[in-house]
Image 1 (cartoon, rainbow, N blue to C red):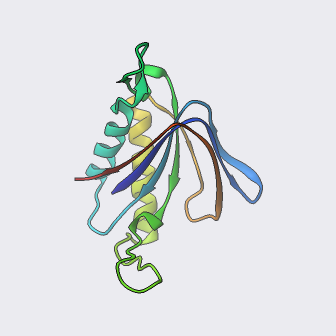
Image 2: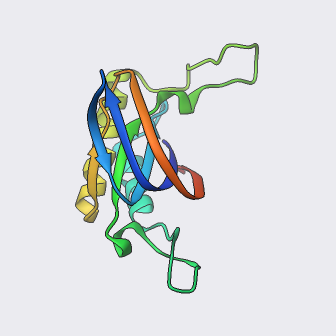
Length: 146
């Protein structure tokens, strides 16, 4: 699995002009599932995101996690994280997991975050979404399992 984590002061996702999910300070998590990924990978990445120290302490150092700050997470499925652009001009998505299986893993990722104590909002799997965010820092990281 792959996750693009962006530290945000706010983020929201719209589907058909309606807000599907919205958070204040926290993390926007774009989540992609690939061939061979498992529930264990989803849980591992969720725990990594919940405990990742990318929020500043009083001295301006990255010493605080999402749990430490009481921030929220906005989870948005993103199969294009598995786009392979090495050949030609059109990405190949053959490395992405089939939609039914991917949806299950993205949901498992979101539930695992909740089990860690994180408030979670979500986009809508498979929908055309408009994602709005204010990236704080900016801080953007790519996490992968393993």
